[in-house]
Amino acid sequence: MKIPFSPPLINEQVKKEVNESLDSGWITTGPKVKLLEEQIKSYTEAPKVLCVNSWTSGAILMLKWFGLQEGDEVILPAYTYAATALAVIHAGGKPVMVDVCEDFNMDPTALEKAITAKTKAVIPVDIAGMPCDYDTIYQVIESKKSFFQADNPIQGRLGRILVLSDAAHSIGASYKGKMTGVLADVTVFSLHAVKNVTTAEGGAICINMPKPFDNEELYNQLRCYALNGQTKDAFTKTKAGAWKYDIIYPGLKINMPDVLAAIGIGQMAIYHQEVLPIRRALFKRYNNYFSKQQWAINPQLETEYKQSSCHLYALRIKGIDSSTRDKIIEDISTKGIAVNVHFQPLPLLSLFKQMGYQISDYPNAYAQFENEISLPIYPQLSNEAVDYINQSITEVVLAHIPTYA
Image 1 (tube, rainbow, N blue to C red):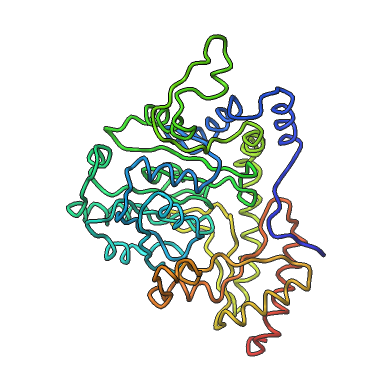
Image 2 (image 1 turned 90 degrees about the vertical axis):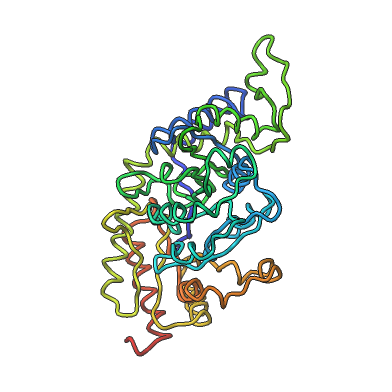
């Protein structure tokens, strides 16, 4: 049996939407992007949604809008993909890393200790699709409000640290009855090829700023900033007599094209009713099996007030180091099963080592990493395939750790 890790779901509805875009003669930013924004807005109940060309671009845009400058600090977990920290660097700030809890998400106690007068934003990361504890994060930020120093009118209007949620994994997840998208001031989803909802490449910014901010006005401003600071997009300029535009901001060129938005439109149409329930069922099937294996540490599907989007199934194996984990992955691959590791903590990567970050400062992040294996989970995966994965992994693990046999 050959089982890929995370193929995209391309059904007839997706093909229909893409062909409509191609046949229309209009493939860059236009009506399809607007429709996808409305779909995500309706689904999450976010006040406004802006689609861009990647999660990274969306995060950079929001940090630049907030006025991040050299010397400003942004706190994020050490356990995340590199883009979380790279967005801070590209926006001109300094990433400040903190350790994580058992669920892979940011440790609020570590967050509290890391806040200084230089802290301008916090980026909680919903690893694997499980939301962070946003209420506690906001409580920490409120308790440190006196530390905040506003350097521009936008920061002064907010009057505290910005919460920018890295929800790359968590579209469809919920926290205390609210969907990701409205759990933070700003939430950015990834729509990359391996995500629950994809546009091949892309991202969606959910704008949820508190009063006195006007989210409609902010959307219009950011839409302009995402297109070179141009006052009219290309679609608007095609209308009779509407050629004239102005450049009002040194913007970025990060707009999403219609032909990619079309993929997302087809996927959003079935995501909540069809795709997400299948992901949850597969997650439960894994959990039901691995809960009976004494060597396995199961990821959480839900808690009293959280529900995962089931983006990853992050299995952990008791009592092994990263070297044994890597050998187990090699042996699993010989059985035709593609697995992965999410993620290497940032201080293990050369760039961040060179910047002075040390993995010894993040013991929980390293402990989570060294025995984690991400298993395939996607709607095209059959129950038979899951059973084959379960049996194959058990055989390999017991071969490497005979004490559990």
